[in-house]
Image 1 (cartoon, rainbow over the protein chains, first blue to last red):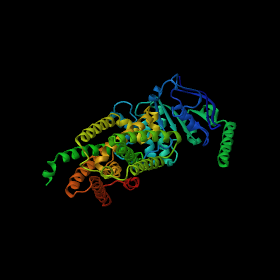
Image 2: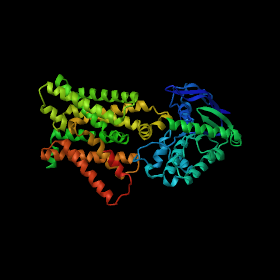
Image 3: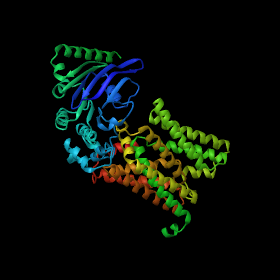
Image 4: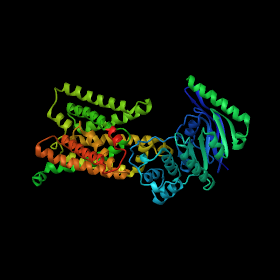
Length: 241
Length: 281
């Protein structure tokens, strides 16, 4: 069952196309890895999907409804940003931060339950600013999960995190997808991790030049070569800018 | 001595208003401090100064004019900031200097500083009339109820605006509400604490509370305790020694902060975050 449908999504910033006629769909229980170099439009795509950016052309539907018509779909989505910006001294415990994600009345057992899923229940009374980057990202996964969402959207969630924490993070994502049947849409430029975890891949570089099952991309030499050339061009373009 | 002081009617009014102001400033201040808006209260107070001067110049009740000027400046600048992406500190500087400029021009036209203006600048116990006390109690009560009702949304928006938006919280409307509440808080507090010192009551008790607490509610409660203690002892000492209350209240809150820092540096409490908290002030 298709739960996300994106049709001809086009975003233009000051005359430059950030996304050009991007179309793809996500089915229930998919683990979709969105890959692409820096500046490929991954964050722009997510901003449109989450209703943070509205000046786009095309159509985005969640659960069959155009997101311009209703924001109800957001209640079924958990979102983990790239590196959440918050005041380092923010006086909130981990439990309080996770509780912020609750749309209904706060229930302590719900918070404890999600903290267990990310292996942080023993630290629930620590201040958020006192945790490591990897632990903080796990808190944000817990926060995203607290309303039992159907879809989890993660925007390069392991940027700047050590490799050991990354492995733990990936393990949690795998469990959420396979054991809890949560659909995951995850952007990354770590091709190895995407190859290991994702069931489907969308390859984005302002336009979408591949969308399909993971093996279809990673076992296709031509596609991989095209991806690395396109990434290189983008990299050089950034340097020229 | 204390019993004698407490027998005066004006002192009852000053203490009741002072406690209401302390509760209001500390709670509203916590949201401002954590948004790196510590000096916003100061800027609003300077806008209020322009309003007070305009009120005295036009012969209209100065507090109402100050309230109008502060609220409209806060809302206007928030709109300008969002539309033209001007940074927060530049917004504060614009608001601060324009309020002061308006006040200075009007005072010059009307022939110089008067006792009334000095009382508004530095605070006065005698300025707090029965009508003022009722007004302050009403405003403080309303503000605290609004914050209590919107507590979760306000905390979430303060923590991370983008994530709050994704959760469906109307972040922009809440931002307008918060600056309006901050403007009302500043104007209702200025007669007792003084325009020049009001921002300290917004910032210092919160920074002190953050030394000891881990959670948000804990910080808010501690901050209220520190603010109420500073205001009550400040008013009592200022009357005893005939000193402007605003200065005493701020000095006492600075003493509490210094003692807290001393306790912290002695290693009696563990909290790594204090040094960067101090940088905000």
